[in-house]
Image (tube, rainbow, N blue to C red; front, side):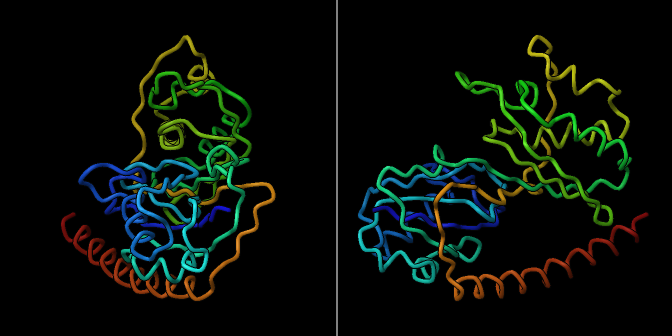
Length: 266
């Protein structure tokens, strides 16, 4: 049997999820922790449900690996070896052939967009055009050999003060697809692109490059599977909650200082 873990991380200090020589990544830190805990043997393959780029976060990333000792794969044990911005909080026993990427039925991302000048009505009207099956070439960074057609099953937008909370679910995503969709939504919402532009962008014969939205607003919120039951580690969750509470208080204070400095420089 293999072990699957649900992990979360604040991606600010990581150079993405995949291992890169000489750079701190989610995979490299997780591997080091698992090996130090005795949960895996040296060189064991660690598979991830989805790739996240540098600066992108995750709340529901899933990893799987062949375990050396099941008792040592408990999230609370692994977390004692991890940096404070990366933690595991649930585990499941899965079959030997389980692949967290190939066996996922869908993935869900959330983008938190600060956009006080966006016209909410236009933003929400535009969002419905992404639903369904489309060619997302113009909404992704080109990867050789990748089939560009994807199916978006949900795209919800909620306003929270000057922020828009954008939730998107699809069978799978292309590289930078979510962040480029967010850029497109913002361009339409700010009246910088006309009605009908989204449909034009779905035409594979048309080419227009748009930049991806900033990575810091994006996180992988959930990966869905059929027949996989994760058991949550309540102790690990509570420890993570306390760390997040402390960080929230600190960053909230810094945000207020930035606001006062900004107002003073008007």
